[in-house]
Image 1 (cartoon, helix red, strand yellow):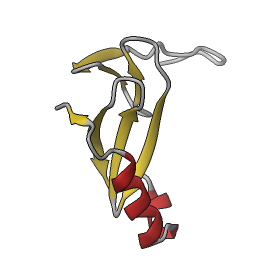
Image 2: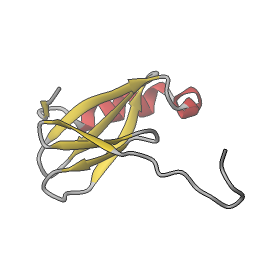
Image 3: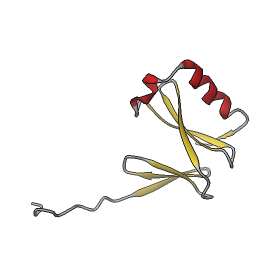
Length: 90
């Protein structure tokens, strides 16, 4: 049994996909191996992460975050266009 004010340590693992480093457990933190800024965005209920400097993107989940429900189809199309010509990493 835990004593009052005792915290448990969370074991953090890292998974790699291309130039992306995903640190888990949730919330998942996705970084670029090269230290570039990444961005998360939605296209419909699907979540993606992109590195604009590496010109890469990857799928990050489906319906994990509810914010997609409040976005417009126009924004999803803009997000889709923003990764045109980028390389998908899995």
